[in-house]
Image (cartoon, rainbow, N blue to C red; front, side, top):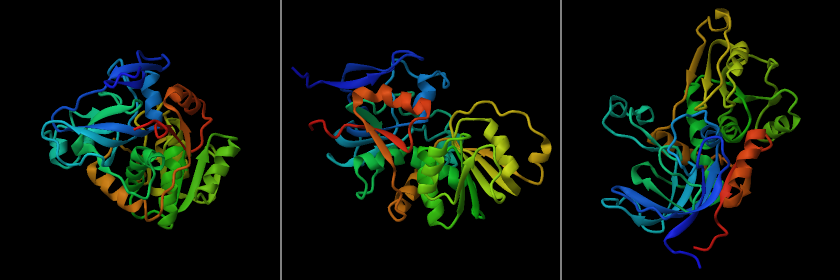
Length: 339
């Protein structure tokens, strides 16, 4: 018999261990929170970094997942932003204190006391989850649950990374052509950029994938593009790509590192940085990023190429992401479950 007070979840008991299917109590929403019935949840490289111990301070045991599409089922005390049955999205930044200097500057992405979804609190690899209503996004109706899930991290963080490159960009390099890259390349092409995609050396499939999603050229990451780049976005967690991107970038160009984790950047001659080249990183997202992105995405329209997995195969999805077998985005699909 199904217990109406419990839910299925994929649980990470300890770092470097496989996820396991578990039956957990359905969480109760606290003050300012909503309880969501999860419909879809994207699978992200950050989930891998957590499970593999590269982000060292997760809550354990932990339910991963921070690209959550869910339906509002209940409200905690004081929660009033949404109505029952409304569909919302939950991103990586699950909450901020609102009082630290960064928050007061409108940079809640740099909050001194952030709460990250699927890291500090349980995420969306479960049939239900709770979320701070202030950090949920209404989702465009034009996107299905499965289509919307990758937009909540690959799309949002990719968008912030893209905007960090600045306005005077005509030639754009993208290193690591996966979930974020194939979404942001669509916006870049829509805005008239020339896109140069860089993949693992010899990865012909990834290069063909990039060309299908708007790239003007695709090649190995250790090869120089046909023309200098005004900016380069790095989505692969490989520090050596910073050096390759600097080599390909013009005077005054920008290299933006879009990931939460990256291997060490090797030493390089100052001449690659000289002439006012810039290296910068992206951390998390702001509410404004979400509002801008979800207004723009349907106009392009941004479309994710998605591979779906049932909840019990979440570990398989992580494995395929780890091995580089996935193209596009992976999404845990709850839609076949009864409401």
